[in-house]
Amino acid sequence: MNTKAPDFISMQPIGDSIRVHWQFTVFRKKEKNGRTSCYIPSFDIYFSSKENDKESIGRKGTVITRMFIDHFMIQKDIKGFTLEIHKRGFRTTNDAHIVSEFIKNNIKKAKFNFHISDSKEGYGDGIIQQSEIDVAA
Amino acid sequence: MNYDTHLFIEIIESIEGVKFLRSHSSEGIHIRAYQGLTGRLVFIETTYEDFTPTEGKGYLEQLGLSHLIPSLFPEE
Image (cartoon, rainbow over all chains, first blue to last red; front, top):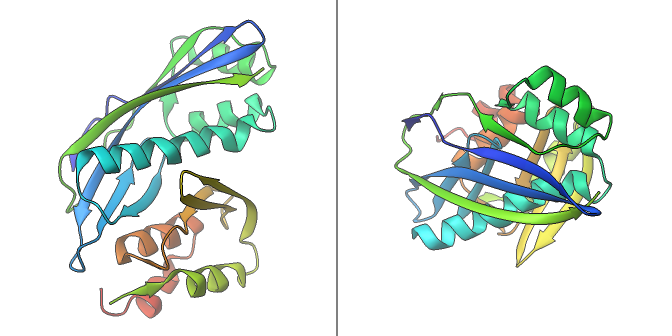
């Protein structure tokens, strides 16, 4: 794996909700026992799958990245979420200003792109997935 | 070689400084969220009874427990 993932997280206030739209890349590695190890660099998440097809792995990655978003959003912790994705390498235009606004709960439409080019030995091609959810503001 | 998920969870939860935060379950997938020794948020998948060495070593690195890799994964 030696790829700059085109991953992003965007947030947009819609009424009383925030629409979170995200794209991630999951890289897979076939293990000796037949299982497939998977890694999502932008979310820094490992998991594995008993299936090796793109659809199954992409679907599982979508559920797990949604759990990552839910981890903060079920407590309406926009500040925690914003700081966490910033720590993981997601950046937006005029980043410092936008992040400062978000941690004050002043949410504006913004797209945070993943800016770290990760590389890990032994992983194959990336599977790119997108999803979106509306969370309570 | 198979690595037992339950035993792995018991080991990391026995280490002072590793903090369990919350569990997440959806569509048959189970995750336990931890704060590692350096404050890093770590998601550990517990869907299956066993896990792969790649996952296990990755989790230990994320938790700040890399020193346990040679003893827990001696064959890798």
